[in-house]
Every structure is written in structure tokens, then in C-alpha cells.
Image (cartoon, rainbow, N blue to C red; front, side, top):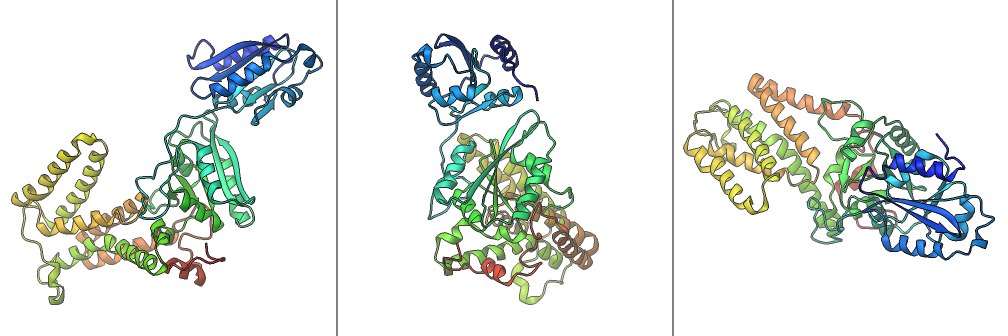
Length: 472
């Protein structure tokens, strides 16, 4: 990397050009005189803490000339005259420019070799309100935001242990996005940590334009055909803190309000924060209910379609499942169309202004309800089963797992339409193969603690146990 020179004006010209002074309206610079010497500061408008910078500048302007006469190195200058606690000294141009673009204030002083980057920044951010996709009836109601420092503070507040480590790194040859690995250095699996660190350091990308998703796509195994998620996300600090206490790693990505929990297995998705804010018996019931809903949401429409596909196949004791009435569209196409229409309504609701949400809901009800039934496009039974599937998809907090189940449900419906019972068996085989061959980013395996089998971990997964000194 290129080093700065010992000539003050040369350095000033370089940073003026590189940072875009006069070219970018948000790059602010100002000349000062410190103890009879020329000095200049650079910062990004909107990042700097004006009151802190003003107090430091006022102090520098009062320094007697005699106190600076023998100071020739920036490290010595910082030790004597920079009162702010977070300050670095650098002589590398790329490191200095990156620091300014991250929000630090750059200081150069004539006759003093080196540059000081003062971390007096304040990123614009929203409040730490409760995330919309992880609400609880009991417990804390705060959530992660898009800035790193508040997110780290939310974890520090919950884990006041000197072993809690926040390891930072930067990714992206142009964006230099910040990443932070959070873990307990006396509980984390060092092999998993080293493996994850190597994967992150080997990322070759100019920028992380999509935040954590860009990181995930860069480090996960290329299995495009496997819909099962390899990473669990959360916007809840209490969930992240609990995972850290278990010896896991929390990966934070700048500009992302959710964090990545690693390693991740399939069974992690059946747990939720609400399980731990109720007594163990109630928590165990909620967890088992969630597991049952998982399975039902995947199999209910394929199994029902298989049973009513041919007249007379439905057993008498299952008569309550109801065979559909004859309609213009075939049963298979009804199920597929409603599956797609539910997703269309979800996408449309994201772009609907709040003032029109009521009208949009009414319109969707009319299209998918009375009108479709009266026109004999859809049967009432199809709407009932698909309504249950849609509600069940919100019983677990992972959108990625919900869409994995949806894609597999569509595959099973198509296989049953083609090969009937053999198609259903093929669908079960496809699901088993995808689960068995899914390769997690790091860790023991995607089906852990079932494969490899861990009796103690499996018990904790199925039953919510009381909190003890060994069970956090």
C-alpha cells in the first residue's frame, strides 16, 4: 500500500483529490492553525459529531506554540493533544481514505508525520424498536438496527463477560463493508470459528450490495437446487445472546438489522423466543405444536390431493376431509393457481400504501372467495385447505424455511399429478435426499442432533427444559 509523504501540502492535495473535496458536496474540509502550524481536517457531512469536533478544534487552537515545537510524529501529537478516546494513527493512504469514508475525521498537521483518524462519528439510524417478525408476549421488546455499534452494545448489555469477543473485519474491494464475529472465546468451537473466518476472508466481491444475503451467497456451498436454508437469521438481541451463550457464533453485517446465527441445522428452525418466556411445560407444548404445524403445512394439500384425486379412494373414516365439488378447472390446477395467487397477494401487500390496505384486503377476499367460487373456478375445499397452509406458514419465524416448504409442496403436487401414489413416494424421497445432502456453511451437519445423533441435544430440542447453571 502507498504511504503518505512527509510533505504537508502534497498530502493535502492528495486527500483533497481522492476524497472529492469540491466534487462531492458531502465531503467537508477545513483549515486550522495549531500552535503556529498549518492543519486540516476532513470528514463526511452527516457522520461527524459536531459538538465533539468543535470542542477538539477549540482545544487545538489554544495549544501554545512551545508545546508542539519538538513534536514530529502524529503518534506523539495524538498522545498529547487529542483527547477523544477512539483515535488511530496511520501512514497508509488507502487505510486513511477508507477510515474517512467510514465516518472518521481525518487530521493532518504540518511538520507532523502521519495522519490521525478520529472516530467521532454518529451514523443516522432508527430506534431499537421490536422487530415485526419476532414479537413476543413476554420479554424484551428491542431489536437490532442497521448500525454496528448499537447492535454490539445490545449484546454487551446482555452478556457482561470478558470472554465475549467482537472480532471485526472488512469485506468488499470497493465498499469495505464491516463484519463482526461475536462469540465467547472460551465456549466457541475453535475449528468452526477458524473455518468461518477463512470463508469470510476469502470473499471476492466489490461490494455487499444486499448486505447479509451477499455474504451468505459468497460463503455457502453452491447447491442452487436445494431450497432448505443454511443460515438462521434473527432481529432479536435476546435470541442472539442465547445462541452466543450456547457457544455459537453471531455474524453481524453492516447496514443489516438482522444477524446470522452459525452453525445452523434444520432443527434450529423449530425454536422461537416465545418458548423461553413461558414456563417449561407451556414452552414445550408450543414447540411441539410448531413442529406439528411444520409437518402439516408441508403434507396436508399433497395428501388430500392424493386421497381425492380419484373418486371413491377416500376412506369412510376420513370422510370429514370432504371431496371437492366439480369445477371448471381441474383440482391440480386449482391448488397450483391458489399457491401462486397467495404469493402474488403477499408481494402486492408489500407495495400497498397503508391507507389502502383495507381496500386491498377486501379486493383479495372477493377475488379468491365469492367470485372464484360462484364462477366455478375454485372449489370451497381448495380455499379452505390453502387458507390453512397460508396461516400455518406464519407459525414459524423463518421466511426462508417457509418458502422451502412451499417449493417442495409444489413439487409433490406435480409428482402426484403425474405418477399418483408412486409420485407421492418420489416426493418423500426427494425431501429426504435434499435434507441428507444439504451442506451447512459450518458445523457438524444439517440434521444435527439427529445425524450424528446426540441424545442430550435432541432432548433439549424436543422439550423446553428449566433454566439451570448448565442450561442457559
